[in-house]
Image (tube, rainbow, N blue to C red; front, side, top):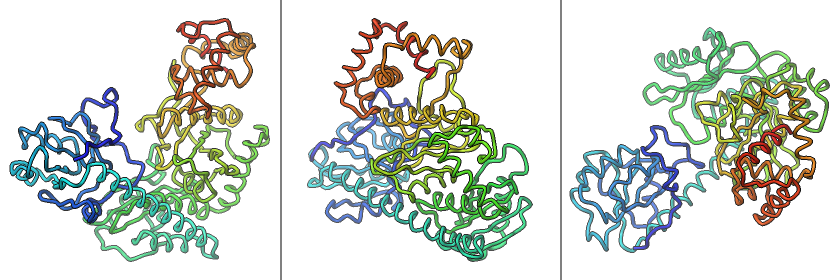
Length: 518
């Protein structure tokens, strides 16, 4: 049996215990039944439940792989160090593993009976891997199924977006959008007031109990009091419930109920939320069109005074730059779907050719950075509205007034470059804060201009990126889109022009302070 070569988290970055909520995968989960249906693999379930969802594949011959599991794995093992099956399975279940694939031969002629009993007793699916099936073949099959699932999800979302947009263009747009949404999700779509009164509804009627649960859930997100969440989910028996607050300040809520939950449902609902927010409130559509125009003007260099009246608010605003993780250029449809997922219609898809999609979000979508922080991944608990989006890499600025949108645009671009270099789905950057903010801005800017005067703009950008990535040549090359040797040459030139030792932490700290002023 081949020894697998699956990508796994480096030992130095693995948490000491499995997280209770594993990070979401870049693709939809794969049902175990789909993998078992692949006849060329010859896999056979011999214990545990038939239903499971696979998020990724991991191979380990450790006696206790618990510290190296994130949850949702199909763990593959030949049982080299298996001595206590009951304890081994218990640790896998505690780590959140989805299933165990056990390869027979050359270590074990058959799957140990004690392991089968332990998996049955503790509810872990156990697959028998025949000797002629390499572990790498199983891994390839899972990735192929994930790619197919992702493709199906994207096609479904695109079709739903087109159908919802067509419905929004009808003479009766709100009922038409609700009807199309109920059709796409296979359930019930209701537009409710903050008091739970039904405005419009579409789809099959719900029995009294789940209907009441849906109304109660809608009140949770109704914008009647500060701090209400923008969305909420629940279940009532086999019915999945969700509620989304609409924009416009009228307290309207979109409430959804469906008997099944499929990958992409949240994105489809997000598209509907944006459309209904524009349609349900009087004149909302015209305002949104003006705001979209304001975004484009801002990105093309209009002055803040020209942009502010169209945006209708001085802030705060958050700028986001985004690129697809597969490197493909974003078109208007995919960029619009991203905007819908993030809850904004202010989207500039650029002109294709790999340009970043740029979005503008009203409100404090991310927190400001703290003292001495550089660009970094944004923990989910610290984000109010911005969350990682499957298939995208995001860079976000801190909330800023409309008069500083040009600076926020640059910060978002810098954060996106950092996110791509560090392979993180979401990174936030911010203006200078903390101790650096104690220096008067005029004096700080004058000091920065004097210190960095010998550097050209490309050299200064390279030095800023290199310092933000802690002097990592490869990551800086990825962020800037150049060869690592080019980075080395530029940094060497910076050291010569500045007559400074860039390995000295005091020098780096002073340069970082100066570079953060621009």
